Length: 89
Image 1 (cartoon, rainbow, N blue to C red):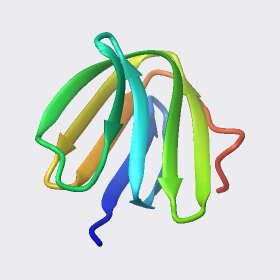
Image 2: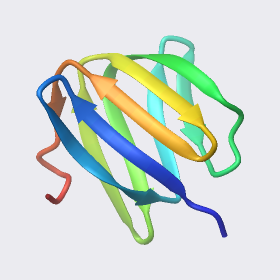
Image 3: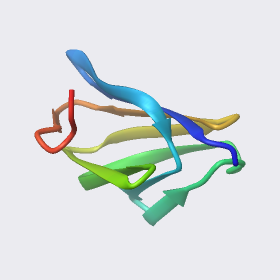
Image 4: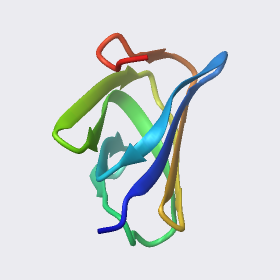
């Protein structure tokens, strides 16, 4: 099964990088689930949670808005501020 390459980036640092099975984020158009093979996309994030499912673990981070880019199974999430206290370093 394919996986996603995910980068979660705040304005001042890379918060998390790794492989994931699924990413869920809230955009201005509603909640969006990204799986491997997803169509290329550029979305505007609203304030809320980003969930990254990697194996049996689900990592959750709060973002204040930002952007989400999907292209060729690579997901990049960029936000001004990220509270990643629930994501292991």
